[in-house]
Structure formats: structure tokens, C-alpha cells
Length: 367
Image (cartoon, rainbow, N blue to C red; front, top):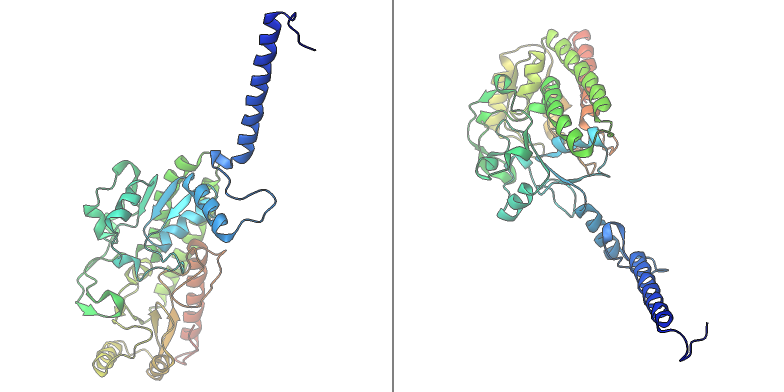
């Protein structure tokens, strides 16, 4: 249409309004195309491969939009991943882990959060604690009750109280193992209870379409198998020693007495410690004993133990974590989480012990 001075005024106004609205709609479409998921502005230009920094920034934006779950150690993290996958609908908050290496900054049981980290924990949608005295800092952290889950809160009657001596080793310096024994997950029955405490709140957070219930039943079956194997181990009445007083709940699950040292895998024990070890060993004069270690002992330590008639079996406290790391190089497989791996480890231990007993005192090679 060609406008002239004779064109009615209402027609000219309508055309101007239509033109302005068309321009606004066009600009709106262009703006929406420039926005990423959730309304975040894209930080790379079309037609160009984003840099590593840009990809990291985009990932950070996506993670910021997901609910955050604090987990107290690699085992609780592993239980969450076993139930809910690798985190496509949530983000695990693990400030006790080194961001550069993905591995724990020392033993998470001795980790102490900063004021900023406590505030970040308080802001999480879910806060999973191991309990049993594992997180002494939590008593002063004013964690929101509605969002905090102590996974051993209902297990008070089954927790073990220790009166440990004060000693020093590793980066933690002087400390003792007094109070509650906190490595509860080494009892498959208690680990099953902990997973049960985790699954309900995950279901609420992630929605009813997430198959946590079905997976939970499979986990329970596997952990029940591990409990049965530990009871069978107990019937063999093995002589068990341990490099550290951390296997109390494994012993509880099988009705097995375990005498513990305070030894580190890479540090040869002193003559005094070896004397103490031999006195403990002499109280149980079976030809063959087994010693549980968190990590592979040095070759000289292993050779000396075998000369004493003691086999070594590795039971790491954290067999696997999000980075696929563990206290040693055993089973470093990121697809295998604790609740699947641990029952297999107990089955291996049972087989090794049965072979040892059946060989009438000969010393088989340790795991």
C-alpha cells in the first residue's frame, strides 16, 4: 500500500504499530536464540568451538541449576551414586576432596570445614552425614535439621565404643581412635541401613520417576549376601589382625575378634611394635593368621609378615570414589561402586580363608 496525505489517519497509525510490534518480536526471537538452557547467556559465538574455560563455565552454570547434595565421605558419595546415577539431576558437594586431583585431602574423618564451606553445606538441598562420631565438626555447624540426614541415627544400639590410645602417624598428627568406631559401612548390615536412610530423601528430591526403589532392593540383596559370607567366615574361627583399629564392624558382622596395630603401609614398624605384634600373635598359635590392611604394605613389611606366618588381605576403607581412586590400586573401576564391590571382596576373602584352613597350615599367597 502506498501512503499519501489522503490515506486515513487510522490506517497510518495501524501500520506504524504493526511495524513496531514486528521489530520487537524479531528482537525477542534473536535474544532467545542467544540464551542457553535456563536463560543463561551463551558465552561462545556460533560457528566456533568453545575453549576449555568456556566449557567449564557452561558446566558450572548447569551445575548451579541442579540441587546440591553434601556427602561426608567417599562411601556416602558412592551410595548416592549407586542409587541415583552419576549426577545428571544433582550435584555432589565434596569440599573434603581436592579439586585438582579429585582425591580426598587426607582422611575425610579428620577434615574440618572452613566458615565458607559450612555456609555452603547449610545451603545444600540435602546433607548426608555418616554419623557415629565421624563428623565432630557438625555439632557446632548449626546444620538445618529439615535437610540433614544422619545415616546411622537409628543404629545407636549397634555402634561400637572404642577406648583408643593416643598415637601419631600420617598428616593427621597426634590423635586417638576413642569414642564411637565410625567405619560403620564395613558391616554390610549397617551399610544396608545407611543406604536405607539415603534412599527415601533422594526419592523425594529427584522425583518418583527416578528408579531408586528398584535399585535399592538390588543393593539390599547384595549386602545380605556379604553378611552371610561374613558369618561363614566367623565359623572358620580365623585369627585376624589389622594394621589399624578400623575393622571393628567387619568383625562385629562375622562375630570375629580382631587385634589391631597402628601401622602404616609405607612405614616399617619399630622393633617395639614388632615385639608387641609377636606377643599378640603368640596368644593365638594357629599356623596361619591373616592381617587386614587399608592399602598394600611395603614389600619388606609383607615379607616379614609372611615369615611370621601371616597373610595379607587388602580391605580399603574407601575402595572407590567419584574419581575412581582408592587407597591402593585394587579394582580401580569407575563403574563399580562400594555396594557392588564390597560384597565381592568379602566373597574373595571367604574363599582365601577356606583355602587356608583346608591346606592344614600351609601359607597361601595373600591377596
